[in-house]
Image 1: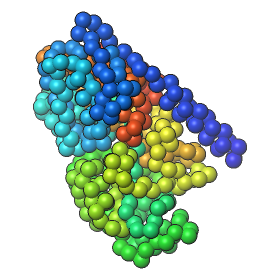
Image 2: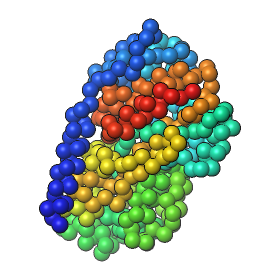
Image 3: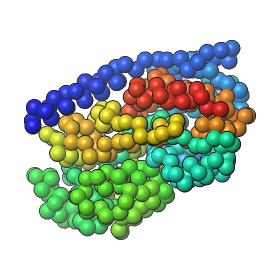
Image 4: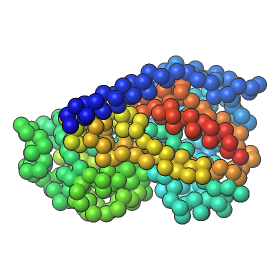
Length: 377
């Protein structure tokens, strides 16, 4: 059993290294409107890529706050290369983004969870002759961020974390937490939990992990709306992160990019692997590389392995989708939409967000996205 686990771990590690090392600058297309972006808001020349700008104008998007830092980098690169073109993206959460898309208010939406059948049906009213599809664009992880004085290397597992966020465990020195953290100076203090107040794909991914790994401790179905008992709420990942930074003995959840920006500590996860797994982009890449496409009829929704026990595979991963019409996009924004999405899935654009805590999309999935974007009409 140990040999099999180690072998799988090595295979995953090699795959992740190959995934990262294979990234190179790539052209998003070329014609008379092609320009070159040189660097982005992260100051990295790795963001440079040839961009087919399409028609000048304003492209509107909304939704996931998990992908907002990535979109900030991309829209700056795209806009600086394409004179007269502006990409405006407002957060508000995945639920709000999908709602605005289905109301025809934005050209694309960002969502941390795949569209539900009801959402697809509703999209047909704005996607004339077509429907909305999921295009996986931003990969990352959900970090369990905490602020506990004197605790620098907190370890949690699925059952314990689920009980903490459901108010079944209320003290930091609870025996279940102590058993996972031998030698740690856990305070005899009340746990202050924070969750998202808005409908959120980040919440959906976290609760999907709980549903898979908590052994029944988390009784609710995975949901974009928070279903746990107790705790305090905050709007968006930025709001949760700000609360964790300010409130002692607190714990919440946010994407790694927000944990890094706010200098927050992230818990390691005991998955059944040889060692608890750190919340790093490289460890998330091991899990995301094993994902498969579960969508049908042109939809590229992914199936993620929240219950992975492979060494160096962080389990609480997420993929943010760009939601767009496969047919029936507005004529005045179609060219710009295709150009922008073609750029964002390019190797150069994916590499440009690496230092924001994101994971480059695996090449096998990225190729499918590139092909799908090319057929949008």
